[in-house]
Image (cartoon, rainbow, N blue to C red; front, side, top):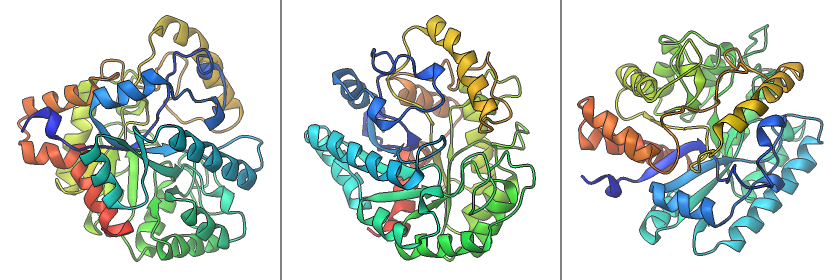
Amino acid sequence: MSTTDYMIINALGALDNPNAPHSSDAASKLIQTSDELTIDARTIADAHASGLTAVNITLGYTLGDMPPYEHTIHELDVWDAIIDQHPDDLLKVRTAADIRAAHHDGKVGVIYGFQNAVAVGDDLDRIAEFAGRGVRVIQLTYNQANHIGDGSMAPDNRGLTPFGRDVVATLEQHRIMVDLSHSGENTCLDTIRTATRPVSINHTGCRALTDLPRNKTDEELRLVAEQGGFVGIYFMPFLNPTGHARAADVVEHIVHAVNVCGEDAVGIGTDGTVTSIDDLDGYRAQLAEHVAQRQAAGVGAAGERADTFPFVVDLRGVDQFRQLIALLEQRGFTSGRIEKIMGRNFLDYAERIWGA
């Protein structure tokens, strides 16, 4: 199979040109809102050139002092406008069939997702509203605790709260993916055992290889897979104990996840853009301030440091997916297995949750 034939679905990524003046200072900011993204000609061209079929983007409230619900509604409006401005290139994904259509028509499918469910507040009816607006993935927590459960950096490592159980049930009712990325171990395990539909961990690493809180234990990975869920491996510093993760580390975490979960449950969720940062030295100079702000706000994760990029330096840009495919081929993976990892497994999982 040619690398151009693979359906590439990024279970957590971003569309943005980080080199544009409007977003070039993102490294020094605690929060980048959707208003501050740069979806310009390069962003679109790079997404097409990379072979990207669809990407779960983060919108809505994740952290900060904005009102969570109101900010989330605004971000939905922003993204609807972005997609309306690019009808020949972007397609809003509501169903698995939309991903197939994007692949057929040469468009990039945009999957609306949250990385924190705090915008639900105490009103479960908001989940129906979010579903109606096209939100297809909701991650329960970010790194910190919320009223639903504990994030990976919350010291108490509580499980789901009673209200959190109601949130999970309501997400399932509206056929929204329950994403356990960033969750604490007990919140993750509680959710897997509570859920009646398969759940996902859209961007993570394997703690058996790198013992950091943002990575998942073999038990978490195995239980997600046994129930028909999905696990996406990220291109993040947490893949190596030094914080300086390389492409080889991404491969090792994929191999381990496949060994634990089986080849039908594992994919990619890079947690990054396709368009790469051109001036790494300039970015490095801003990174220390950004990391310090995250730590001061209590939202950073163990493994984040001023000297670690929040991406894999030798697996980025428009060739990142082709490079990964080549590395997996070198590891002896068949084209069928690579096809699953690059997108087919996420699509199959989407069909199980959203319907065909």
